Length: 278
Image (tube, rainbow, N blue to C red; front, side, top):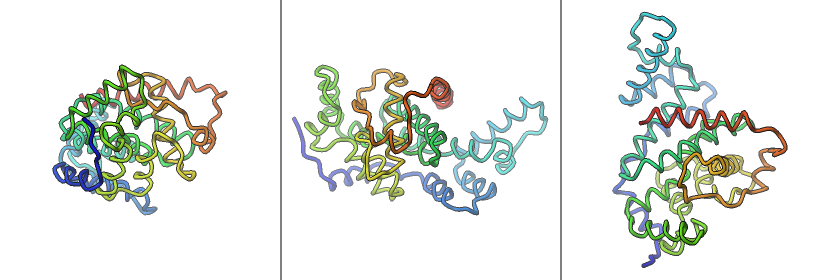
């Protein structure tokens, strides 16, 4: 049985979800601040006791590996030891992992999201686009599917059967059973959470890969295509079946180049980061 979802229905259910983590919004805002410092990042991280505990644990492990004897208990010292870029990455990932876990769905979605987030981040670094924004876009690109699974699991199962048995495009199957696809649902949720406009656009267009020359859309689209090509989330039915030439051209990708090192780095980092959340 199919349904015809609209924005009001999506928002009504969204009210039952946990609040979007403010630390993610604050960290993203700090990326736009040219005066952002170690102290500011430490203050933002310290707002979340779970993130603080994990960062301190990582810092102490790093200190022990370097034969340091001091047990670090201050977050600013820990951030200084680990490095701003690494701390931002871990804080963003930890916050969004805790957030998506509260949707009550399987780990598969997070595993796939981590892979796309890592791939997007590495593409951002290679093609000179903000890597932390790319990481968040990758981690959140399928948030609309999490909503579908959480609130309409039977319809979602029908979508899965259509895709697996008949090799149908995931968005086409979703529109048949929901009236909307997950990119449209994700856009409504992202707007509801007041996410930056660039992230909203990336979530809305990650399957088609082109939105008025938007690099974050291109990075997210190509990242998911790479993750699927490398089979980093086995069993994924949300495959990008067409790789947008516009997205590749916008980033300046030359597929004649040897991407072996980049692909190996994406695979290795995905494995490490995924294991970190087990």
